[in-house]
Amino acid sequence: MSKENQRKNRIKDLPKVERPRERLISKGPENLKDEELLAILLRTGREGKNVLDLAKQILSKYSKKRILKLNYEDLIKIKGINSAKACTILAAIELVKRALEIGEETLPVIRSTKDVIAQAVYMREKSREHLMVLFLNARNEMIYKKPMFVGALNANLVNPREIFQEALKQNAASIILAHNHPSGDAEPSEDDLTITKRIIEAGKIMGIDVLDHVIITKNKIFSFKENKLI
Image (tube, rainbow, N blue to C red; front, side, top):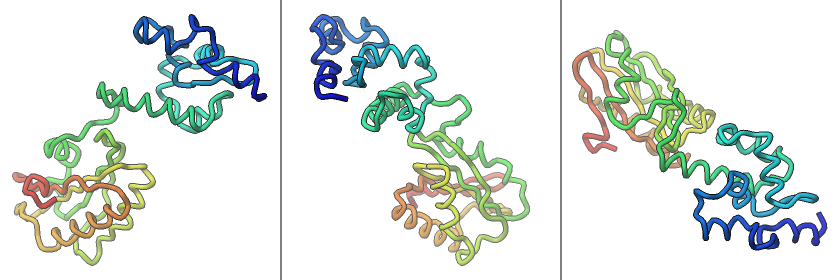
């Protein structure tokens, strides 16, 4: 793109009456058209199209709901959207989702020990110990859950590497551990304490928080977080 064309495609080089930013300030964001709001995020157009034309073109191809579901790779494939613009759009969308607590309907939000139990209730009746991991995104939505170990949870056998390999695969921001005690005693054993400590330390290195470890029996539960062990 020539410098002259690039200059003409910036928001500030449009006539004042057409500038989305000025219109937003004077009339409020609720009175702007969809393409004007998108143009503010895009900031510049591309060769042959000013930023408003580019915004209109994108919205003619992608509905607003469809744009909300596009990821980084999808956005940078759109002609006129580079890495910086894609990041700006994704950041704006994510901030709004978090503010409104909007999430995918199929993703349960894990806010309490009861929410963890709801995901691990099947372990109450198991005759052997099972360790399951809930993988959460930054909004505390469960994006995946997976039984990781079955049998006596010996501290020498449970490898944090396997847990965090899965966390990286799922792009998880945090994890919650849950396992059962067939004995009926919900108090953590020495192995439970050691395993949890090792996983927390590994999580700190990986940048993935361990939010809780919940022990489940037929009639009792024990939360490491609630008992201030995490």
